Length: 124
Figure 1 (spheres, rainbow, N blue to C red):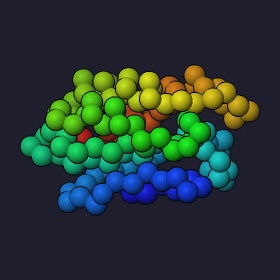
Figure 2 (cartoon, one colour):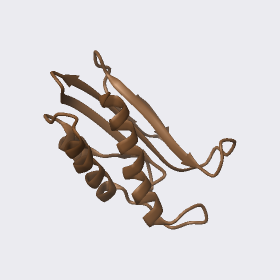
Figure 3 (cartoon, helix red, strand yellow):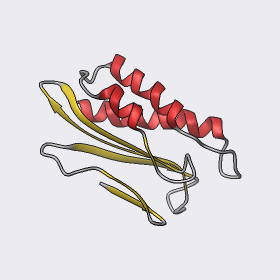
Figure 4 (cartoon, one colour):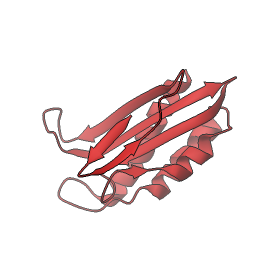
């Protein structure tokens, strides 16, 4: 997975059995400008996360690779407790600003909401 932004990028190496998802929030479907976007990929072995990649868009000056959130996931079973810990971590790692599209507090919270949706769907 690769996300480009003016010569900046976040990339994750190709892996076997990788599961991933991208979600975004915007004013409406037709608007190309996102309020926030979250991409997450992971691999599971025996129900435990053995690799994770999490990237956040529109919540910092460039795309953010949420490395602490990834570490919270790695080695853990994809349970409600693990997902909640990852949600808390991602909200700390996001560095949103207030602007005409949204408040920083809303963007921070939505990082957690979108990540929770992604991880819940990847675990099933």
